[in-house]
Amino acid sequence: MRERSRREDAELLLNAIAYVDVVHKDMMVENTAPPPGVTGRVVGAIIADAALSDYVHSWARARGGLEATLSETRPAIDATYERVSDLLRRTGNQDRRSGA
Picture: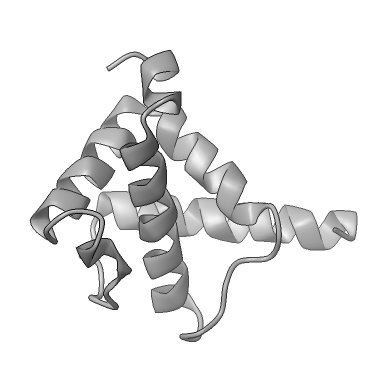
């Protein structure tokens, strides 16, 4: 899937947001959210990367679609999890340094 069509894929966007949220909650404390703007930047990185986009689609399908992405099932700790958690850490740190 080309990046332009991935950016227009509402299901992928929602799944990517849900995946970022689940990874963040797994890394941090439940019932928290990333700082403002962080989720959008990490989702943008997922959308821009075909392999990450494919992974997020597969992750959501394995959980039964959009409804299941809202569950609190812990994600698999794998290379994609590590990439997304690293993006969350780096993007969050950038926000703290800039005072956002």
